[in-house]
Length: 183
Image 1: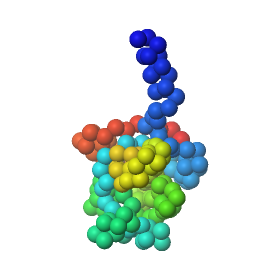
Image 2: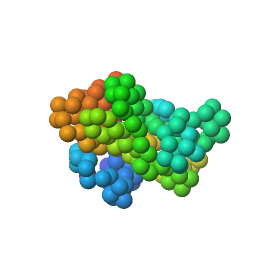
Image 3: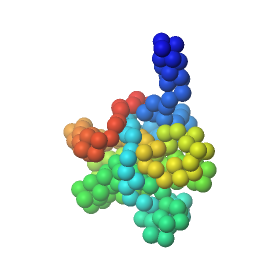
Image 4: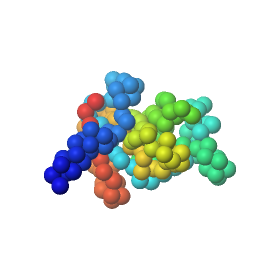
């Protein structure tokens, strides 16, 4: 009994991905220096807004048509990303989403920024465990397999803390897990 417990414990420490999943140093290097080192990582559950893969590749932030969704030619913004999009779009008239690095056929990572008058937020979406793709090709369509790294570049400390609190409130209301991460 003890041997079995120790084996499971050792295997879980070695092989099970933590909340950072497949976040790699090469992803962190893509985050511009203007963003602070303290970031949030969420483990997602909702697909959120669906973006057109074709338009995202061109650097445009366009919602996917029903045909694109039916033919799997879309990209999930995920729940927290969609919440932030809606929140900032309602609050700031100069809100502008920008595609920094679109996802592709061979990569599931994308980077976008949300710019508004008080600053900007960077979102980096990545898959927690790419090995799931080999077991089930449709795992790329399951929001639970993704995490979202959220970094901030907001000069006003009060506004930054208020926005972080709003995000954390959304996370708690939707029973998501998150962690604070220093890059």
